[in-house]
Structures are given as C-alpha cells and as structure tokens.
View 1 (spheres, rainbow, N blue to C red):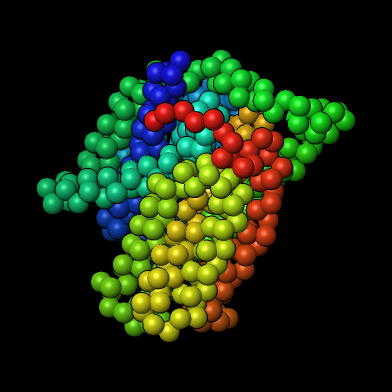
View 2 (spheres, one colour; view 1 turned 90 degrees about the vertical axis):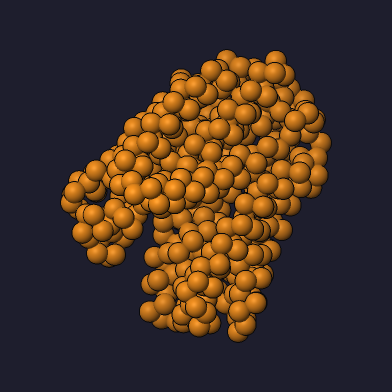
Length: 411
C-alpha cells in the first residue's frame, strides 16, 4: 500500500509538470502564432479570453466526471486530449481557426487541471499530511521546461506547429504511461474513509441535524472558498501582466531590467510553494492562508507606494511569496470539504479562481483610466487584506486545523 501511494504521488507530480509544460509551450509560442495568423494585440487579447472560457467549461465537466469515474480514467484522458490539441493553435491560419483551436485546447487543459487537482486531494488525504503546495510548485517547473524547449526549438529553426506537435506527442505518451500509478476510485474512497475515521465524532456533531443541512453547509463553504480563490488568483493574474510594465512605465527601468520584475515574482512564488507544505504541517492551512495573504498585501503596497526600484523588487518578491501558498490551501480545503465530491468542489473553486486570473489584467487596465498604474495596485492590497480576514473559513474544515496533528508518512 505504501509503495502504491508513493507511486500515486509521483504520478501526480508528473501530471502537474505535464500540465504546466503543455500550457507553457503554448504561452511561449504566442508571439510567433500571432505573427503567423496576422492579428493585432487587441484581437489576440480577445481570442485569449476564449482559452479561459474553454478551460472554465472543461473544469465544470471534468470535476463531476472525476468523482464518478475516478482519476485513473479522467486524468490521463485529459492529458491525452491536451497533448493532442496543443498543436491546433500552431496550425491556425486565421482568427476564426485560432479562436476555435484555443477554445478546444482550453477545454482540454481545464479537464486535466481540475482532475489532477482532485486526485491530488485524495493523495494528500491518504498521506495524512500536506503535499498540495508541492504539486502546484511542479506546475511552475513545467513552465520552465516549456521555455527551455521552445528556446532550443527556435534556435534549431523549427516552426511553432512542429514544436507544439512534438511536445504534445511526448505529452500523450507520458499521460498514458503514468496512468497505472494513479489511485483508482475504490482506493481513493478507502483512503478517505480511513483517514476520516478519527474525525467521525466531530463530523457527526456538525451534521446531526440532517444530511440536507450538511450539504448546504458544505456548499456554502465551497462558495466562500471560490470567492477567496477569485481574489487571490486575480492578484496573481495582475502580477503576470503588469509587473514588468510597472517597472518600465512607472519607475523608468530599461526593458531588460523590467522583465526581472515578473521573474522575481515567479521565482518567489515557486520557492514558496516548494516550502509551503512543511509550514502547513507545522502551523496549519489557516495560518498559511492568513499570513500569506497579509504578506502579499505588504508586498504589493510596497510596490504601489515605493518610489525606488529596489523597493519594487522587494515588493514583488513578497507578493509572490505571500500568494504562493494560498491557492493550494483553497483547492485542498474544497476537496476535503466533501471527499466524495472532491472533483466537483475543486472545479467550482478552480473555475471561479480562473475567472479571477483572467480578469486581473483587465481590471487593473481599466483602473489605469482613473488612477496611475502604481495606485491601481492598491486594489490588490484590498483583496489580499480581505482574503486574510476571510481565512477563518478554513477553520470549519473538519479535522484539518491545525494540520500539524496529521500523521506523517515518509517521503
């Protein structure tokens, strides 16, 4: 059992890296595809919304399917579909074909994203200790791999379609080869039952009124988690698109120096996720969400009000470090709220969070019509403070506050 559980954990890492690599492969080829199709930046921005809409739809479909059929079926299917459809944007020859390809690829990516997160919830439950943040860190590693592959392919003179097809083909093989190591539906249910037994008395006290009342309570908690995910991922989306522009346009940094703003944010976020599980195990998920959001608030306020370039770099680093552990805790809490419906609940939280990530750049852009860019970032401060205040929702997650009481299992 211990060996199969470790195998399931390794396979989950593989799928997170795979998802990050496939999405990253598309992202790094956006300029080349834009030039090939011949669309403006504004038109491309509208087309990218379709990618997000497709992903949102895929999450809503794959979440319940994962609960019904099991991750061993849905996760590799999502990986295969995502790998197969990756080449479509590279083959597009006009705005309409690009729109269709992005919608289809986004749908498949959403299926893989939510199903692997639902499986990660079951793996974490079976381990009896926090491992979710580590999974999310490896997603970022996949983006780095995609950038390295794209750089090598470009140097070799390969066209985007050829590179995307090659990456997608490798992704299909990896998705199929890793499927056997995933936890089957029965094992996921068994692990949930065994680790929940210690909390059965508390759960009974919470749900003695009626099953309907318990379901309403869980649904309400998941909705609140989704709202917090919306705010946190809106902040992340804003940083992705506006960090470099802030240094360039507000502080007058050269383009090369300004690019390091996003690099600082992304590196801090990746490092934070690699370390977050240990802190969650010691201090609990509530503390990580609350103090992480508070740290992010301090960081983005420093960015918004600091007139010096060094202050901006420190601020973006604090912002990334603070946000790093927030989303994994929200996804984990959604899955553990009702393990039998982990896929559906994660899809609700991830779906609304994805909307926030897409909306973040647009919201900040709209605010720049009213105030300066640096002052627009104060909205992010408000969202982070609100998240810190609302972190208490994790306290209602049965048996998971603090997580330091969770039994340890060796790496």
